[in-house]
Image (cartoon, rainbow, N blue to C red; front, top):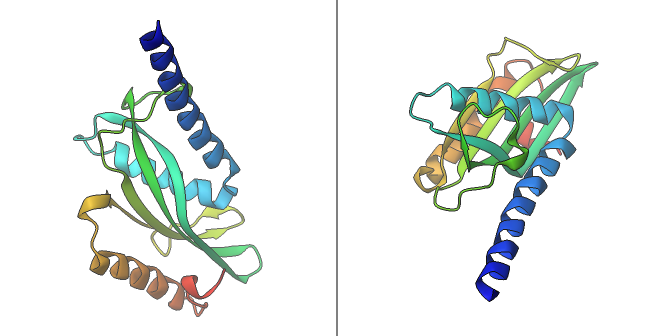
Length: 160
């Protein structure tokens, strides 16, 4: 009986963490959700990916608005694998896997009137967290800052 109660508590905790992650995603401003969606779309396009991933947590968010209705977005966040198969449509029952490393993603892109612009090309870089080096992190930021410099805007990470 005690083992059943323990199993029930653990299951509830795993489901709760998945629900919390979905709430975290839904609480993101729309411009940031679009970047998470872009990263998930790119991740799911890889044939080696077998599981459904969910947004887990934001690490850094930055945006600047150099012109009316134009924004440059930078978002660094984690994605986490679930026990659901890739292509799952309803992820409300997907429980997180704790036997897989987090995926660290950085995205930057320009939006106009709330839509991601094709130019400059959106930048998406996702990698399993253990494989991510400090040099790679620096190159991500440099790339995104260069993208915003081309437009004459401030650097993305120089703003809040």
